[in-house]
Figure 1 (cartoon, rainbow, N blue to C red):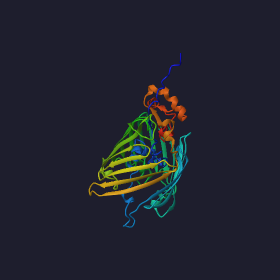
Figure 2: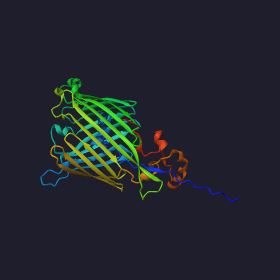
Figure 3: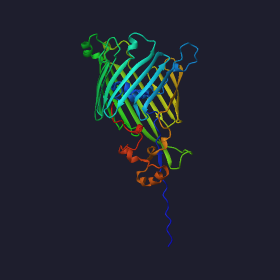
Figure 4: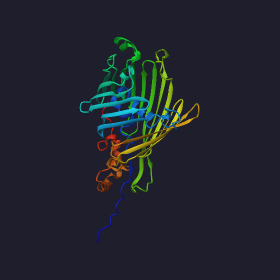
Length: 402
């Protein structure tokens, strides 16, 4: 008898997982220079949502009025593509006559970091120039962050300039921050409630971009302002029919983020004169693939829509344009940005971890993909079980609160 013909089972369907538009996010690249209190409780995610790729309107004008055009430039070096916490950068702006050098050194084995900010060239004199001369020390672990900053060249010799303590217990995060702005004597500064802020946050999710998560935060800032915030990250898969992809590619992963922040005064007598009015702002973003990001935000006075395009050449570049509408006048103004970096490999979106098996019961068929690609694809079961060991670092949850 002849050999029976065995029908070869087709390869299992897969869905593409594009790389994050930015890693780390633009607002997170200098996080080691800031108090952890200002970054946790969902604050960093909200800052990225509210600020990244939203250019101010006066950054794109016809130039008929002298000084209308405002531009920023930043040059950055970091020790490792996967370690954004050890770096040196230079930044300059046409609106701020300071050439600023910022540096950070972080030792993950011990959780210790040191950082400094110093103006190399400055036309600012007096007390304002002292604000740019800052040194700090911090410690971060999986459940604790503590640190302080000083201004060693300040005539006031404030010790410390900032100090914070943040602790994480499961899904709950609590913290306090000391930032002296009131009181002339040391003891008065430490006991003045206007120099202290406290916050609490509750978060659910692994903090990996591949899994949904949300954060709720409340804060009492300087005993005068109550801040409530909400941030949610959603991962969805949509079907695609791309002639440039193989037949087994049936979908692509999208990242959707939504957040809002409400600020309200609780004691006008303790509110600083320059404190903003009570306000509510809402924002959302949608990363459709590795090339396009759409964002929008709405506030009490204006609304902004931004579209960003990223090319994955080497070096890569990102171009974005923003349109801002003034709610009172109805005027629309535009701003644009251009960013170039050489921090990441551009081709890994087709590598092993960027394929998620849609049908776990056909994982045994992955051998064909291993033979073709040289690597095993990531299974949906890996994501569900929070097994992120085979993922690129940018898709893994953070192990320290820093």
